[in-house]
Length: 198
Image (cartoon, rainbow, N blue to C red; front, side, top):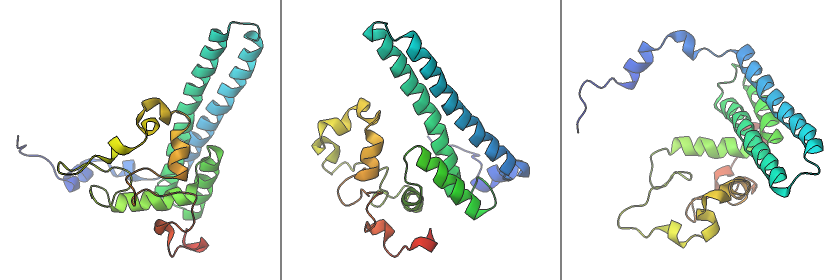
């Protein structure tokens, strides 16, 4: 199906008011304080509930903790997104402030900010490149599916809850040769990078 009269990216950008592209440091910090207060409040609620469920059935305790993990995980995803915006420079007009806030936010949720920022830059540079993108890699029809050869755990959806992120940070994700470790300073993506380049 061929679509006719589809606007170009330039036409779409021209149709969006300029104010939508302006960075607001006040609004950015509002989101940071809001998400941190959500994380703190949900933890305080859990502490309050622990006293109430101390003598409860195991299933009730499990339900409370699972609910907390899901809620806190969702809040942490929001905090990650704020750090992501810092990495893209859309948090504020000040690069040092962006990196400082991004580093603090990502440290809070155990995400290595600077290595992630570098690998994310590589990801954007290679978006839609079937041979170079280390995050999204479709399988060609005439190619063996490496996902079938991966371990069973890596393919189970529940693996991502709790363990998947740490696996991605330590080993990376993708076929051999394209996965990157965010903790290995001699990884090919970090070659030639020194502290002040970050």
